[in-house]
Amino acid sequence: MKLTIRVFFTITIIALLSSCFNRELRGKIRKSDDNATYLIIEEGCGADNKIFVDGKEWPFKIGEKGKVSSGKHTLICGGELSIEIKEGTVFHFDYWGP
Image (cartoon, rainbow, N blue to C red; front, side, top):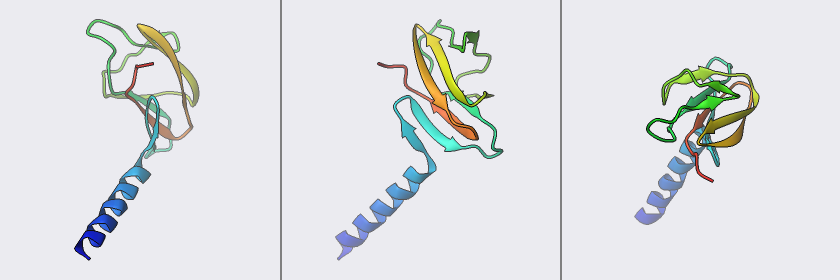
C-alpha cells in the first residue's frame, strides 16, 4: 500500500514538473510571463567563442534573457544550427551538440 502511494506521488510530481517546460532537442520552452518572445542561451560553446544569432553577435551574457522575434533563428558558435521560437515563449537554449 505504501509503495503504491509513493509511486502515485512520484508520477504526479513528474507530471507537474514536465508541464512547466516543454523539452526540445536544443532546449526547454516555457510560456513567457509578459507574452513577449525571448531567447536565453544557457550554455556557451567554448571559452573564447563568440555567439551569433541571425548573423549578429549575441549581446547578452550566458543565462541572460534577450528579446527576439518569433520564428526560425540561426545560431553560430563554431558550427551553425537553427531553432524555432514560438511567439509568447521563452526558449532556454542549452545544447550545441549534433
